[in-house]
Amino acid sequence: MNRKSNSVELLETESNTLQKTLPPENFRTDSKSNILNKQDSTAWGKTSPSKSYGSSSSTSTENVVSTLERKKVTTDTLIPTRPDDPPLLPGEKVTGQARDVTYLCPYHGPARGILTVTNYKLYFRSGEKDMPNIIEVALGVVTRIEKVGGASSRGENAYGIEIFCKDMRNLRFAHKQENHSRRNVFEKLQMYAFPLSHKLNLFAFEYSETFLENGWTVYEPIAELKRMGVNNDMWKISKINENYDICDSYPAVWAIPYQVTDDDIKSVANFRSRGRIPVLSWIHPESQATITRCSQPLVGVSGKRCKEDEKYVQLIMDANAQSHKLFIMDARPSANAIANKAKGGGYESEDAYQNAELVFLDIHNIHVMRESLRKLKELVYPNIDEVKWLSGLESTYWLKHIKCILAGALRIVDKVESHKTSVLVHCSDGWDRTAQLTALAMLLLDPFYRTIKGFEILIEKEWLSFGHKFQQRVGHGDDHHSDADRSPIFLQFIDCVWQVTQQFPNAFEFNESFLITILDHLYSCRFGTFLFNSERERVVDSKYQFL
Image (cartoon, rainbow, N blue to C red; front, top):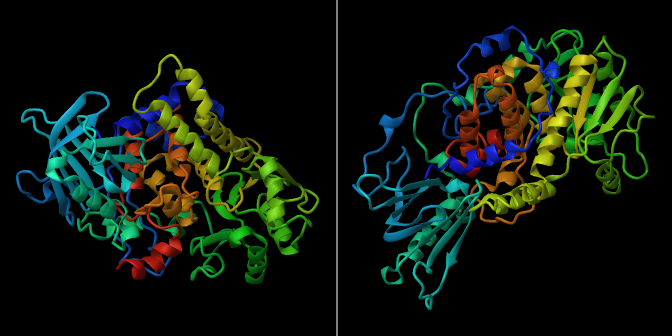
């Protein structure tokens, strides 16, 4: 059983009933995309990051890691082991092993063999010599572990362990009671699947492999801004947040309107949720129309105003000489945005923000998305009811959510590309739905982001540096599987990207294998890229928490 197979099946399942929503005329290309069209569509990159944050620099151009840079072939670096041990990575060690364990495969029936637990993975190998059944699961993928059966259990395979995974798999292993092996395996799994709950390091801090390329420096924020033509007459690079004291969930380097002062920034930060002020994500190379991102304004029920914020938004509008209008794309349903006023949040009033048009994109929150994925898992695993498949798929609303996100990104693309109008994007805090929308819009507009290197930079920039809370949304190393902060926001983004690659395969330098590899290591904790909640935590906190 291939450990990636269920992720592939999930992505394929989602696509089967999704209608094409991206008309070709809204998909921007140039000479770079024509080069991509000539590439073999099966090309994809291998993962390759540095192991931890120990080498983080205080300068913003060096402090964001990437696991996605292409790496050398590393099969020769596997550590020799005892005959019954699995192949081990540098820094990986066997912590427990049980013989005469039965894997209860939902597709092919039971298989008996040896179950090994390391500080990185679960590894099962059946007893057949010629074609053994091998199950290999990174422990970071595990969301919870339960014992099945007790001392009085008498049925065959009624006593064992069930493992629930974040990639939609459930794995069940039966133990013989007389072997007394279950307790040790269960304890080792609990300890190394949830190391933070047991005051242990994540595996990324034990992993000692070296690579030819340094994944920590794949994304250089100043170099990326210069690629887009910043600094210029209208936009400037600012390091006012170099110590993360203006906004602790934003990166150290921003691009902001040229005429904005430091005092303006501080006032705007006080008026925006979590201090997440409007900053530049992308600028059109010809029209200078921009995509900027932020969080909701703190208007509250009394309708507070901030003249500095209104001036700031006007400067974003003025930076685009092609249009005297600005679209504010609020990712939320309008009812949710109105409800946020009672909590001190809200949305921009068109009376206060002259020549700005507010549009609600009706994308639901993290709790709705989590429930949608739960229903999807129930539908596809372990077996699919063909008779009720279409009605069951519709009832999950997963494809409806994917379509809504894609439609929102397309509206942004249309305003920027066709109407030459700048767009400001936000949701509530600006780190979930906002990242989905800006990253997808940039992917559609700029062929650079459809290369392997460009896509790595896109993830580093719009997701990692701008503070998508990967630690909370994925739950790395944490045994609180029912935590309300968990949600498949980044998985949805990758699904949306996959949908686009299926419609325009020759516009991309990579295919689904690359996307699945990214998802594998979103969960694996083998590399440092997706650990922690923000750039500041990766640069500052990681040195003291783990090293």
